[in-house]
Image 1: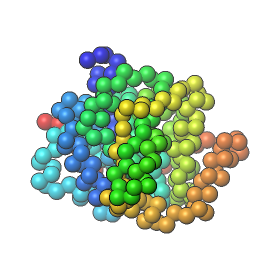
Image 2: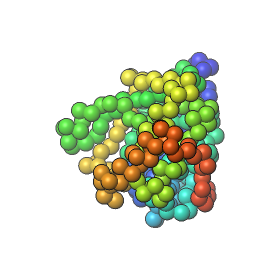
Image 3: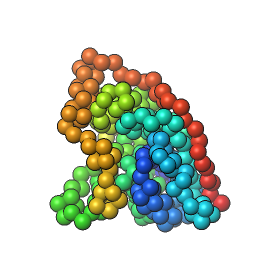
Image 4: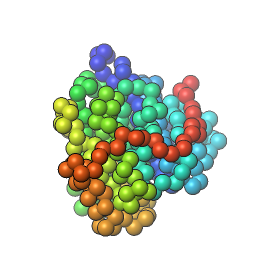
Length: 261
């Protein structure tokens, strides 16, 4: 095993969840199926973005007894609308390794793929993207295999220099939805870092026909709501609105922790 792989460096996987017990169940079953090597290296960090009931209630006592991987959950104590940038910042803030993998609640790496991720000879000047395989009953949706902007692998140094995820895009403050990930990925080359797509490592994306509607569908995100954050992003690109590095402007706590046997 080469010294510059994630098997040697370790990896923190940051997963935000908001009122998504079905998705958590899918993720939990997937983590159980990982190899022992992956379970010993990856620190899974779940961020409960003030779900009701909380994510801690998703785990049955029988499941808790069978956890043989490293799992922590941090809970945001204020229900801030569309707070994914804040949830990601919290998970990264609490991470225990220099290498970070962020993923949406409907995305995962199956056992063979997480082993490939951990075998990567990583470069701290690169941000890694991955193509996707969609699990869906819709044949047209299956055709989209383009890389996901919300599944990223990067070194903490990249995150710190770019400035993390701008929490001005949190809907509670902006009134809008999204574009925090566009803002982050757009700035990668600005600071001399490289984007790299790993064509042979595939993210599995579960669509709403399998795991239920996403937050956009549940809350009726329409064009006007997206436009608010798009306009905010353009203003930041033009320098009309300052970048915000003031993260974690909310109360939070550690809600549970399980360590590998």
